[in-house]
Length: 478
Ligand code: BG6
Image (cartoon, rainbow, N blue to C red; front, side, top):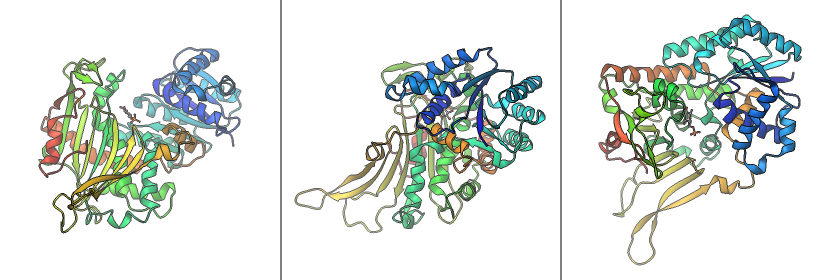
């Protein structure tokens, strides 16, 4: 059965900056089903031609020049349709149903690239209008809710309209090549498995640092903060991939069963631990990459007295056999010195040291900006005497695969939705388990009124994030 993709929020940032360029790439490489149409939906009254102009402007800006050709654009634009409707008005869904009939109703993929507040009303209106049959799928973006309770409500409403197999919850980090490479590294190489455990690993660090501020998203971000925007989803997903057991098969249920076990094994951070094991920060004015940046509370649409965190660091423990006693340090923040996403597996030192300058090994998995995996090993320096120095064994994935174009996360994920493969999407119980663990930390911050610690834009985050490791004689990998 041919499917069409209906993008609610069709004139929004996500659709114009990410989804349409990703669909254009897939089209150009002949990956899209031949007659799949893409229907942009938003409240704006636009003629189809104007929507195509808008899409073209954004795709030209996003797609590399060598990949954008007039011929590909022309054939891609023939897939585009536009419908102006208000997704909060039940009556407009009857117009949508009519539109689908006049355009030869077939399978529908509803992509909700809208504010999360609209998820429930769109899902229930689609159901009420009879548009949620077996030949439909729905794609929703994080954040799914802002607490366990709201996530339960969204999942329940969506669950009443669609079966779980029809629901695709996107976390775009799972679409990144290097993130999937993490599974290849762990489960396709026998080398690491014997040492991937508490007997050999001292601790793990997961860092997702950004140089950007909140840009034009102040209104959303000021109600979310780093914990809801990044940690509850992207960082916990990375943690799951590092910590999970090998799934019995590489399929949606087997992979997600293992991830959810990790989320359920996270030790709750409650009581005094909220103060001891968590750090919140908020950027003040500073200089990022040679540009002055304003304090967070001066950003557009942000409350001037805001106590939303733009940085968070946590010490997390996993209560299971493999990871008992191995802390996972997680941190993420905006307006930091450098954009880097990386995972560091810090091994324990050798059990009996023969050389005074020997250091413990670490494995670095860099997700962004460059994709590389490196292991730091100790080597003897040339000449007399047994002097050691750490040397790097490095694989630069972009170089190794330089003949292949690097896919954007959304390309891979959109194709998975079209092909009905939900392995890289979050299942309902995963999202709920993540909120279940995050909720008490958010409540703890409120109860103890932990104001975010200030850090200058362009720095490495608040001092307290460093003390989190220093008190155990550890340090962040910089
Ligand atoms: C999004 C967050 O999910 O991820 C943004 O909402 C953040 O605040 C972005 O900037 C980071 O994604 P990436 O792919 O640039 O690391």
